[in-house]
Length: 252
Image 1 (cartoon, rainbow, N blue to C red):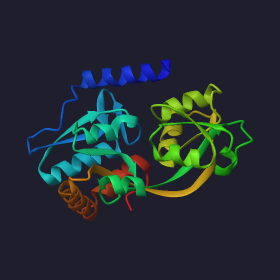
Image 2: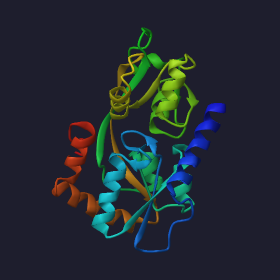
Image 3: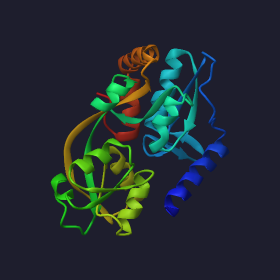
């Protein structure tokens, strides 16, 4: 509980420090408000006090294509869709995995990222060698994330956390057995930290596609986003940003 309160307070402090708005969606047609975590590297995170990342740069590029000013609203993942529904922002840019439940509830763009899921354990763990090995184990996940459902579907007990970094902290402390997440996020973490105390123990066997999300009644906005994404793919912007953050094109 302390960890969650601390992280929530830290996020609010970052929002205040960076001047990011937390008010309702702007009525200004020239402003596009976008909800994002700001704590999920390499997709959306702070670097030297500036919000950046693959999702952030793609979202800004979309704003340029649409001729709109982009304003980011940093929001913890587990409340990001509530923020969208309450019109605190117009769009979610935070590696929203496309699945039937979200497709039914939200207007989703064409995918702009394709990736795979992995199971992460402590380096000395020999019990977990597959997704099925999570049965009866405890994993740390964002409660409303797609990876939480993958872990629970494998029979794991899920401990709710704010994000991947917090999941790794619980894993290293021995409070959970594993965490399931995007291979791109895991790779970024190990590259930046050099942390050898954890390892990728298994693949989930699932290829996921990520999209931008808007409210179901805002299909017109998603149509504009799709058009912008098509242009960004055609002019090489998506490939360039993919190479910048991942060393390969993850946009296809």
